[in-house]
Image 1 (cartoon, each protein chain N blue to C red):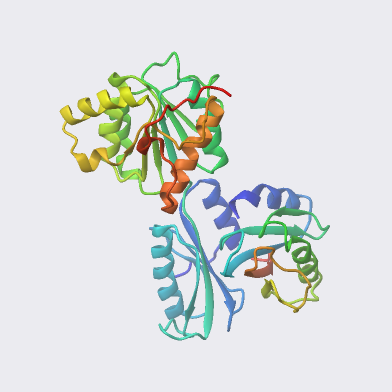
Image 2 (image 1 turned 90 degrees about the vertical axis):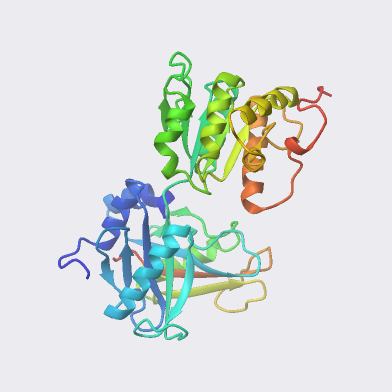
Length: 105
Length: 269
């Protein structure tokens, strides 16, 4: 979170709404530890990261849905053999759990 | 005991992070109250609520413990904070202040090590008793520049140095090295490294023993500092030192220069 404060400030000053995705859990090997944070604004701009670039594209799509109100806040998971929601996974073979929410607090 | 008319929770989090003060953020990620938050700061009232006063009390206590240990984790509770139940999933994220790297000696290698320390997220202090060397112009990347004798500086910050922090002694001069190392082993700092050749360090060990350090204290000192990657330049040496700090924290075996016998600087190929 610390590393994206400047981006959040800038976006909010410009009137953008912001969604926050944080790594809340890992099964097996994962590139980023719990707490790793990525933020997305309603124009699709991104700061921070939650993996080694493996799932960021899918997180942007989900974040935009959250900002549009078509996806509820909650945990979203990406795994190596995961067929859910998105056909993406981690190259390192683990499963990553993200908590995705609008910055409305 | 949440504040009666709280500022938006994010604003409190943001201000606390900007001040580099410790804070933990607890968020309900599954179960009743999804998205509810509790912000916990040592010695200050909590902000927000997870929806139940007992749950707030238990999570607040756990969050302070996690913060103290620098841990971030997901935990499960009953709806009123009961242990061994799983009705509510809470993600507790700790924002501990940045770890500290204290570099003694404003020498050529210091600027490179300070830059590498910043890259790794350390709050970097450069300390040298000689004001003419420890200047802002030479070390613009340092968070703090101190003109002070090493032992005096360390005595002032001893209670703030812990297992996540590092002390690197680059002075190359027994007059400064010895008080720096004596001061460092009196703290809980996680890493202590000292620059100098094997011969320099053999002499320094004698002086440190004369200064009263016992073998257990001397064993904490990584000297010659760094791991053996054939580093030659100040920048390569900085990488070698940082690699040693990372490996020590992770408990991973690496070819520490201290444990080798060959030359520290290999002839260039």
